[in-house]
Length: 54
Image (cartoon, rainbow, N blue to C red; front, side, top):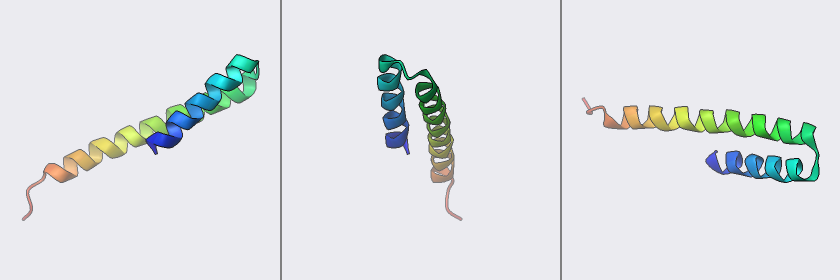
């Protein structure tokens, strides 16, 4: 998931460089959403992994 976030960020940078502002905005939004979903999943996996097994 982090891979897709980085890919969309690169797409946004290239689109912004060439002047495609609409595409750059959408790709940036998708990259932000995917990054935060990855971050939440990472934190949840850390919390679940630290619980002792009963």
